[in-house]
Length: 189
Image 1 (cartoon, rainbow, N blue to C red):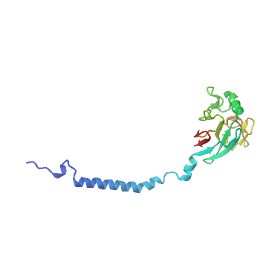
Image 2 (tube, rainbow, N blue to C red):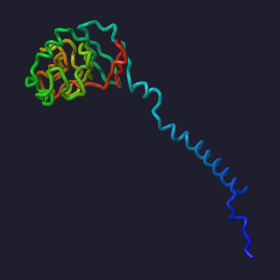
Image 3 (cartoon, rainbow, N blue to C red):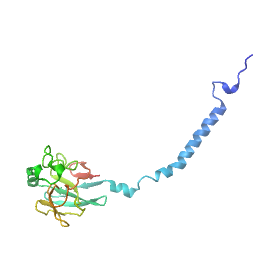
Image 4 (cartoon, helix red, strand yellow):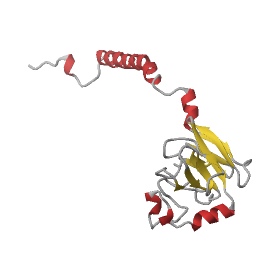
């Protein structure tokens, strides 16, 4: 005669329920204990505030250049005139010292070492990091032989598109990640 044992039945027992409930409460307790340690690894509010910068450019007049700070670095924002854009487009790529800017497949005012020189449809705006690519000095705006920027530390001259034209700097001024969120606001970062 065969007998059945209660431990081998297919029906869940009260003991099974207690094991599952105890495990669930234990897992929730562990998660509640560990979460503050994980959460403290997130950057604090002051760091997040520096991650991106929204700037209203509606007050920047045509031909004017301003400097803003982003992540502790100067950023040049310039509202170029039609004449400045025309002069930048007239430069032949083989005249540019930056080797990546001399790529024959690129237009003179198009991408060089950076993702872009000017945003498509917004060619009158140029946004660049304000550090000379030679030794990191801050160039003086609206000056130099090409009307762009001049680095007084070692004599680098940049044009109105931020491209190195003369001097020891090896590359064009770098372009930070940016986008126009609307017609008058730029988000840098």
